[in-house]
Length: 367
Ligand code: G6P
Image 1 (tube, rainbow, N blue to C red):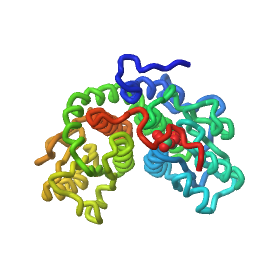
Image 2: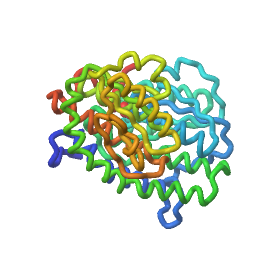
Image 3: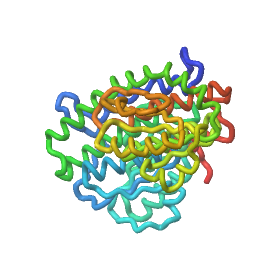
Image 4: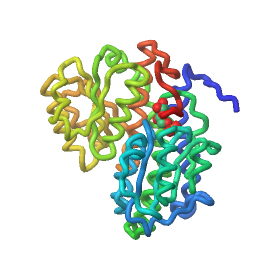
């Protein structure tokens, strides 16, 4: 297959822009539109009702998708999740339940540590499910069950569209698990599925923030350190936002759970430090908003990313990015977009090699 950049300056820009479409394609494999229910692809059926826990493992951005999934599996399916970075998981010797399910997540399907974890779990008698983008990859071939992401070829080293597709698959699996385990009613399932069906349209709306974000990039390009804060499922998105920025702009960035602000990162805050606050207008909003005030009181430059009534509580924020109102369930896929765009435009402004950042590889096939 030949992939080109189309009208875009970089593959990363193209891949960010493609997200509504590829998330739509991916979800179509997991949703029975007519019935408003989750339907797993042929040959990928898993019964979550008998599991006592779920082990998830991955590297890099795929690991952050797993972190989000933990919130979903625990909330919607009351299924305890054990999650770790693949390079830690394989040597940590966690007690694993024979006959249990391990989920690995990988865009390339070739990441050495993720593959080693798969083999380790298999040797312990676990069944392996893989959320994977390359259907011919080693991980796809070795897994018992493949849950495909249909992101298409991803060229940019910094993962974007594969991430939101991974989240979409994991979201569908969590809803399926909730039904299997009798936690979600048919009605609950229908509501969550309709949120997923709406998602591509909302992602397209989120992309319209691009000109505003491009203007912010000039400020970020001058920063030495950037903080990203979030709570709940926005916490892994804060980690992902920081990872994207450091990968392609080489600016030091850290993602933190907003509640941890006082336990360290607040010491870094002054007027030179942009702080990206990811705060959907959900039941956790007020808590995150109070952390935002703590940052504001120390002169930090706040960029609030929010939705609904969130902008009314922006206080002295330097900038507010308003996303379309959505179910809290799907906010991780929406909030991923502004953090990707912010990293992208900051890097473009700084003139780095966006698609091939220094020292990084698309797929890490050695330990
Ligand atoms: C590398 C890439 C990241 C990716 C990670 C895991 O570090 O640069 O973008 O998230 O590997 O790769 P995988 O192919 O397993 O998702």
